[in-house]
Amino acid sequence: MVSQPPVSSDLSATPGLEDEEVQQKIYPSGLKFAAIMVAVCLSFTLVGLDSNIIATAVPAMTRYFGVNDIAWYNSIYRLMSGSFQLMFGKLYAMLPEKILILTSLSIFAAGTLVCALAPSSPVFILGRAITGLATAAVISGAFAMVIHITPLRKRPTYAGIGAATEAVASLTAPLFGGLLTDRLSWRWCFFIQLPLIVVAFCIVIFFLDLSAGKSIGDENLISVLRKLDVLGTAIFVPAFTLLLLALQWGGNKYNWSDWRVILPLCIFAALFTVFVWHQSRLGEHATVPFRILRRRSVLFGFLFSSCNNGSLSVIEYYMPTYFQTVKGLSASMSGVMVLPTAAGLVVSVPLAGYLTTLIGYYSPFMLVNSIMTPPATGLLTTLNAGSNIWTYMFYQTLLGFGTGIGFQGPQVAVQATFSDSDSQIGIAIIQLAQAIGPAICVAASQTIFTSKLHSYLAQFASKLDVAELTSHGLTIPEGLSPWEHTVVVSAYSHALNNSFYLPVALSCVTLIGALGVEWKSLKGTRVQKE
Image (cartoon, rainbow, N blue to C red; front, side, top):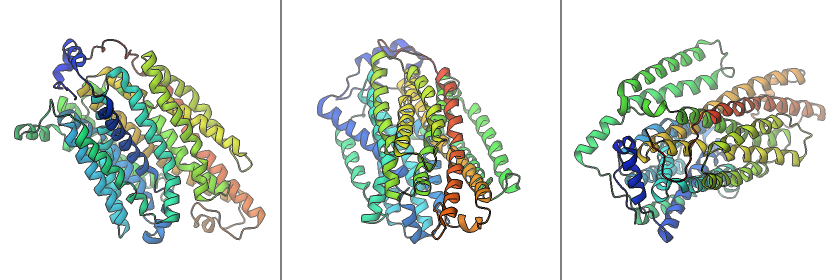
């Protein structure tokens, strides 16, 4: 039975009262605790699967929907999941968590079903948008469950288990997607998720007791709607939509000097400025209260997470392409070849959680992350068609371990800095970084790759028709002579290596974030909060 004290901003202002309430809190154990942890892991698994499972299914999908909209299948998902993290972080701090968790799982199921049954590309994009929106709520709900079933000093361990589950699901999703597409249909990439949603939903209903503290009444609901800052979200989402649009168009569809690239960037800058001004006016009712945003752990944690996740996502996005184009492997085998990254993550993420619980500090593991990932990403830029399999495996394992060892550091940092209520908002800001960072970085790396590919094809294969070569997408056309095949593969290899320079720079920037977060101990009596 969970005994939850009322959570309010008053507790954060009176540390002594908060410590007394935390010490009196009784956490679930035995079957109830195990069942809720299963729901936590299922939530993370759903997020991991849905984010990457269509990677190997897209070619089969184009036979139904064509190729014009395939870029939006991933972009709209990332955009929606990242943009609404802040709103759901606020909601979880204001409304009963159990109701929000059940609602988010229901919306996730609806979006998944729309994707599975979509008769056209626009309907499929709508389904991806719905699941992206629900993902923001599911992630916040998973962390809410961890907060309410474990004391602060044990949270890194169990949050690490959940994060490792998501990492494994995300990195193995392309393999499962390829198998489902080959054996059944690409639609089963979404049908397969529905039973997982049902199990998580039932566990939350029967085992999660979060009835104390918060309730929904007419007055409370009206107050929530006033405090939700819908206008702020309405400004934020279009702003980053335009930024992603400019990054995808610049250097690819249009030149960077083209007005169709400059105009979205200018509007993004204007809208983002308005968003910051709007947040400053709202004070405590803002989606991102400046009281929380000005803390070092939030600012530098945001920088660390956006760069760390952005770096990993670029590698995840392009390594299957590297294996298929440069090494000539099938889509299924390319999914197998990226598993070393998952192996590194599945070891390092829970290990960091356990060691953080053991020593009481999270910052050292963020520093280890920032020391390991620059050489790992740098080594990946040296790959070529002649590299042996052990080289690929070692470099990816090193990257996965290095990225995972500090992955949950910023999330633990905000929990150690704020009360449980404010922690929900702080975690949402970190989750925003983990979603927006990859969305922006993958779009930027795509621009680098495309522009460099055309340049290297013109340089290495000047006697071939570059337009004809690139019309085949990211595949080597058949019918080339051995010499032509070699130079085309070399062009792809050089272009991909150039796109990996961005992760090198991003992983170096993570050091600033690691050094900037506050050093706080998780052991003993809970630290005082502002």
